[in-house]
Amino acid sequence: MSPHPTRTVALWVPDWPVLAAMAVRDVPAHVPAATHDGRRVVAVSATARAQGVRRGMRRRRARECCPELELLDVDDARDAREFEPVALAAETVVAGLEITRPGLLLLPAAGASRYHGSDAALAEALVARVAERTGHESQVGVADGILAAVLAAREAAVVPPGRSAAFLAPRPARDLVHVTARPDAAVAVDELVDLLGRLGVRTLGALAALPPATVEGRFGDLGAWAHRLARGEDLRPPARRRVEPDVAVSAELDPPAERVDVATFAARRLSEDLHDQLVARSLVAGRLRITARTVEGDDLERTWRLDGPGAMSPARLTDKVRWQLEGWLTTTSVRAGRAARAARRGGEHGSPGGADVVPGVAPLASLSLTAEEVVPAGAEQPRLWGASSGEDARAHRALGRVQGILGGDAVLRVQVQGGRDVTDRVHLVPFGEDVARPRDPALPWPGALPSPAPALVPVEPQDVVVLDAAGRPVVVDARLAMSGEPATVRWPAPPEEDAPRARAAAAPHGTVAPGPGSTRAVVDWAGPWPLAERWWTPAPRRRVHVQVLLDDGRGLLLASARGRWTVEGLYD
Image 1 (cartoon, rainbow, N blue to C red):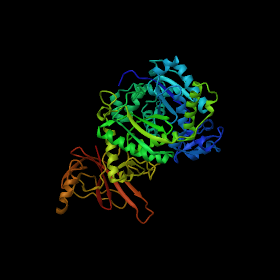
Image 2 (image 1 turned 30 degrees about the vertical axis):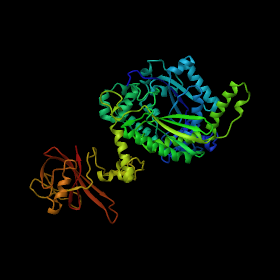
Image 3 (image 1 turned 60 degrees about the vertical axis):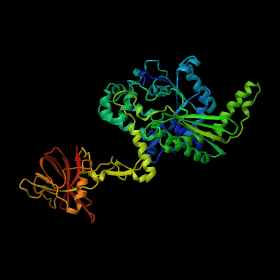
Image 4 (image 1 turned 120 degrees about the vertical axis):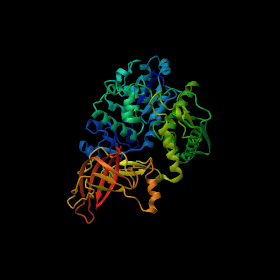
């Protein structure tokens, strides 16, 4: 990656998800409105924000702030479809725009600013053309680097060359959320910012001042991403590169597609084909270029950014193509583009009133997808030392292929839910699905085990025998009191017929404690933590937890219930 960030223009339409929803639902502009995903407020209009409604609020809290609030559903396809006229309007000023997300466009500034005379002149031209063609108010920012450009757009400012670091330094770290492309990424960034705030890192300048290796080691890939943005660097600058001609797929639509569902069916096959070609060549792409041609010979083209794990999956590619097709096949977007071309043709031939002749929507005759910024999968690291080399992306692709073969439930990931012990807090969900947790971890759970949690929780707890200093078994009475202090932990030998299975369970990759038949001395211990749940029901749960440190350096979480001691977790 170049040490000098790219001069970038960002065009931003404030509160776009709300504006798109209001336009589709014919909600008047003066009515307070917000979009809601069923759990929280995602976007807020200016009138609702003036009455105290904020992003992230629950429905009831938002209604308390603004009783007349109009709550609209979240719809990514609608947002992308309605944003197409804005992109068409901006493209009459500068060709080759890139959609980061509906409501936000990026483009390299160097050539466009020279053509229009200055950064400020380019910004004025973009704002005027979008307002003229669509009626939407937009803001444009110009700066070095993507984050600085996006934040400058929120202030309608032009940051002089070389001043982006100083522009970013005093801003709150929470501004990182403005460059995220997906709602799930925004939630992850919010959690990261909250953690940074508790550690005293509250500004982008404070984050940029931290050593890169320390940030990545403590916060992982998301922390490294945030750190590079805070320093004003480009993760993937919006600079055009020559397209790899062999990483492209196309299809003739016969008969031509007039409906989105028909075109999406072809797009799904193309997305799978493109994905398979990239995987077969061990390549990854930074952008997806979608090109279509109508039966009347008009070319439609748009570029989408591909960021984050799973962005190159066939399902994600199909979603982006479907959104774009919906934008093209709506009357507003296609007619706007054809009207502009008709106006230009009329002006060239001296024919007045050419812009008033607006033909109907033309069916699509062909569709093609092209992977841009194609690089080898192992060359994804944005700098020489310490950054990701693409292992996460390759792992996501591999897991996606396993799910395609065995089904979605064949690959599970762990979510932390509410509960009092480690087994209760583990919730397994299919990989890639956003499933609500059955129990909210944010609620208070009296009697829960203290932090830290064990690093490893076995699927099946291992039975052990806990002895005191005199060699007698440690037992727990009816009042959940222990008969003595633990001094020895012994793993009983399994029956002969279960010996092979016990040896397999004690293999290095599955070991949570010394092998069956072994005995270890306890050098230190903590607890006990008695827990009685649902004592008023016919099936109450009563158990005691103890943390022990063995003489081999292992830390174990032991539990006793109904006279049985088990290993519930291993501390590293």
